[in-house]
Structures are given as structure tokens and as C-alpha cells.
Length: 231
Image (cartoon, rainbow, N blue to C red; front, side):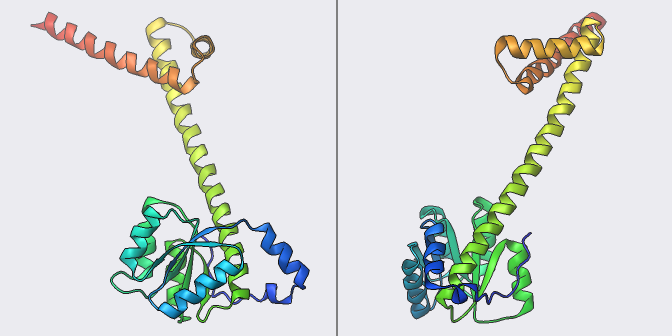
């Protein structure tokens, strides 16, 4: 999980005007969902986002509406007030992230450490204090997107490793089947699997799955024959 701290970044404020323009150009326009029950705050956030080149695709006034809009509006980023009616922002974020991975920036008038920790554990990638200053919003979005990309890269790496380990196990199982049924050594069993993969232009994992499935079928058939003979 990303490390979430109370966000009060002033870096953009100290950039020269040309630097701020380059920073804005470096970030593509995002589709943003705002979940905020205070109308004036929501309107202010929308204006600030538009000023830095982003599009607001939805404005939710409560947590349940935020969950629904996250599914229909397909935003790239969510600004989520923690204290929302009907369903609080933390629970709304949890439900959204169960369906779709998306960077979320939590917004709150409170600076309680427990809230920041809870937001981090759920999957928040940045935290903004109200009232939100546009010069805080810009770097917070940069940080949230950067942390989200890092988290996604790590998730994919773990997923790839898990898949590689699972394939290795299934290859060993398929080799064992060929060795037992064809009475061949392990290197020959591996060679035949690879040869079949090349000849049929199939991934090795698909060939391995076919061998395992066929073995299960023949094992079942052999048991039936054995049972009939025993009757």
C-alpha cells in the first residue's frame, strides 16, 4: 500500500511561471470524478481542475452516488471527500476499488492521523486538506498518479511471478504424466512438450493443460474398465 501523509505540498508555488506551464503540459487531461457533498467546495474543485486542464465527468453528493458514477462515468481519477452522507468516502472507495483499480485522492477538513491511515490502507494515493488550494491540487494529482503507476507495476510483477510459478508446477506435472505413460526420461518428456508447442503453434501452457486433461480422462476410463472387470 502507498504511504499516505497529510498533503500540504508547496512545490508548484515556488516554480517560475514557465515551469508551471511545462508541468501542466506534461500531464495529460484527466477525466475526474468529484465526490463532495458541499456544493461550494465541489464547484470550486471543478473550477480548479478545469483551470489545470482536466475534465470533470461527474459530481457525486454522497458515497452511494460516487460508487454508481465511478462505474458509469469511467473516470481516470477520483477526488473523494472522506465525510460523505449515506455512505462515507472510505467505504465508497473500498467498494469502487473492489471493481476497478483507480487512483483516489481523499479530501477532508480534518487532519486526524487515523483518517489518513485508514485512507492509505484502503488505497488512497494522496490526501488534501480543505480548503483545497489549486497549487496544492496540481502536485497532489502528480503524486497520486505516480504512486498508482508504481502500485500497478508491482501488482503486475507479482501476478507475472505467480503465473510463472503455476506454469512451472503444471509443466512438472505434464512431464511426469509423459514419463509414466510413455516410459521416457525427463529430458525427452520436456523435449516432446516443447516440440508439440512449436508444431501446433500453441503456448507451452496450453499444451501442458491438454496433456493433464487427457491424462485425467484416460485415468477415469481406466478406472471404469477396472471396476467392470471386478464385477
